Length: 503
Ligand code: BG6
Image (cartoon, rainbow, N blue to C red; front, side):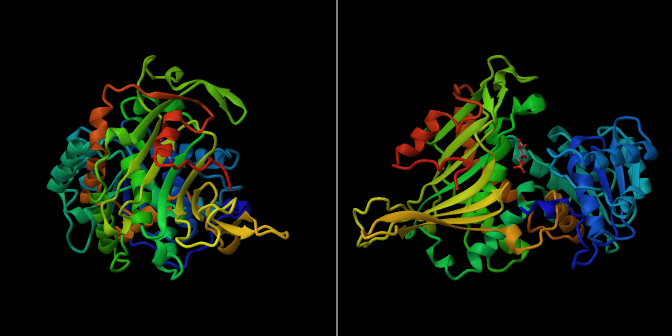
């Protein structure tokens, strides 16, 4: 990503402003609201993508006032200019763009389980409303039931009522089904926007363009030419302050049926009939339903121990706050998946995600088959072509190919062709939630998950949730590439993970 672009105020967009709408945020005082939703609204405001009649009502159980909330959020926005570890790090806050949002912020004290909170809201709200559940997952069902009971989800006179549901959406297949049932008892599928922030990443959306708009790639994107696909979401951060959430959750629930499976869908689904939301969501659901439930023998779970991360000594997972001393929660998962479709017959998909790993890298690597008939059968140095789609933090693509080394002999050497988005497109600075909020206000569900897709994702990992309940974890040192068992999982097939951070 071009550094300059990341620091600029976004220019006005070519897209029209979203329709007039009130955004009601449950969890107004929480982390998500200040770290991601407010920067996203600020960027939408700078892009002139919010209606003059846009307003925000923040609801939370602490005591606050409109002034107090505005002041706290304004201070946090300013603090981003000096905090380069945040997802949002502009070099300045544009007074007009932030002023537009700030002048529309209203705070309401309210308990999420008290029907009075919702009766009051019903008295205050008219027209289009998006309810955003920026709260702990245990409140998702109860808030939606209260919204329904207060009549807040009734649509009519051309006005919409929509609900954005954060993750984690359930903690297994049964709880995801129960939550879907709770939601769908209060409104139509089209009113619920189940968010997965990976889909807000430009580089993830771009996979569709790469696959289906390029005559060079589309024909070879199948078992006949592809030997294996690796999907990696490696992080250097540890669990740190999130122990209370992470202990009962673990890396599998936190990352796999949602984020990693969304990447899997983008890289493996069939071509949708069109770019219409339902066409894309149909194609994704079919792919998720084709994942063979993962056998415990095809999966590895790991947990980080103390180590060195980016030159700094860091503690092990069990020593993090709010984590049990003997915790068996995994902070790393590696899986081998089989996709039962003709396109992918016999092609293994290797997925891994972990905290406290060598490097931060979210990427997909497509390993192509070596040519069936090559005049170089025993040529030293011949390697399969590998296309790496880099999603985060680098944004672009690299293609590793074989070429002739200069010299009298025909010897092969590795060359890498790369492209970076920032070299070709002016990137609008974003935290990923801008598109998702805008799409929700305009009613475009393309980037949101449908009930059937969520349930299919959970169904695929269900055997692991059962098998891992009392299973031990493999250990890996913080700052490493994960446990040895994950390397062994691939070695079984004569394959090896690409080293993290390697070009
Ligand atoms: C979140 C997970 O959904 O995604 C976190 O709860 C994880 O544990 C994060 O760190 C990763 O997202 P990103 O965009 O930073 O790669």
